[in-house]
Length: 576
Image 1 (cartoon, rainbow, N blue to C red):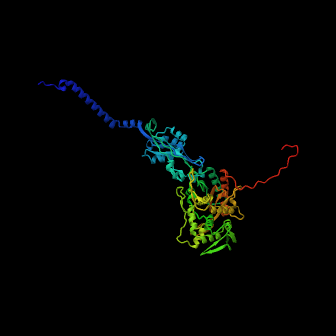
Image 2 (image 1 turned 90 degrees about the vertical axis):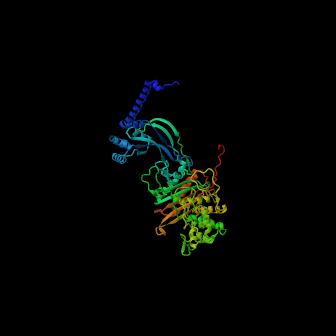
Image 3 (image 1 turned 30 degrees about the horizontal axis):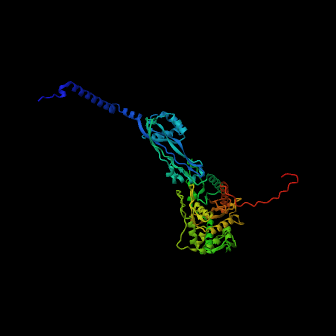
């Protein structure tokens, strides 16, 4: 058998060459590894820094908040935020002075911040600068200073719509008002972009968009900014004139339940919250509860009419102006004598409505008030909304029945009371309230029979237009106005009623012939010039309602009849 020699033994020199070359290559690789990791360890790090593939955030635009006519109430604008790497910036202290000047801060403050964060690699220098100002700082080319693009919320109407719209924090997350309620609807979804950057954060190459940003949804409110400005102005004027502590106004479209204006004083500027006081942030129309007083008398009379025991011309003896109910004395401002039911409303007689309630019982009145929305959430979903208190005693004592009849012993918000009066303006039908624009109004719930409801509207008009009515200052020329005044004693720290602290209230609808709007005005603690609801709150109602009727082109229903004037006949031969 023949033996075949191996390649190694046949070509010994080639084998040695290959093995030698492989050995040299291995030595070179090991040497390079040792060099990079031990002798020149910064090389790989620098090269990595110079060619870093990173993912940057694509900001998502937050949705706008608009009034019912498309006027902006909250918008987001692009801004520049500056940040720094303290480790890198601290290596160039000679640049601190010009950087502090460009940022608009003092040099000691900048030094202190950088020293306190010396071990960190990221701190904010200044957030939400205008793009022009941010670019001015970046052009200084201070090592360790970088910029990112963000969005900032801006409120064009300022304090006029602050309590309704609310505000966001610096990261555009809703904190108050509808910004908080509809935060998930308004906020967008940020996108991601893959980029190639150097170690200073400068863009080398835009590689690709990993995911696109999705903007937030717009929100169209029921608020009419024109009416909101009017309510804001008239409410502030009343507070200044009467030295009041606070006030609220709610204006409702009775057919749709849309809130056209919701104003509170004191207010605040959401664009500048540097010296913001917590009490100024409160949306009092939805959060503050109070005993409504005389506006409840409308519904007490309504219960009497619904019982069939009373008619508008039923006579009520209120003499001698005082009435004993168990351990309590119910009294009127003065002795009104014998009044019909319309007169009881006009004069706002406590004795008259107390007699009605004691006759028909508190349960029917309590049931009507509950059906009208008192003592319940409005369904607006507003953060911090109060529900109030509508008592439901197992056994109603005469004192509790009497006080309920004229609006004491329960607590409501101005918005709840406005919803109740909106039902009066909608033929006795309650529809849900809304702070969003309504395309298709809800059918609603019939609470007061239409015939009784019309009788109540006639009485409310008499309370404004009738001789001796308490709401005369709420009149609007050319329109039939109906409403009820209220002057409510406030409670004190002892749990009793203060002698010299009041809330002035007016609630009403217009125009009476074909109601379109309902409004409630509450003025808290007027201290000068008077405190009666007809003196303090009624004029605010009248001014705002006049503006609403004109702006919404509501046809006047109380114009004087046209007088016929006889014109002289033209002389013969003269052409007319």
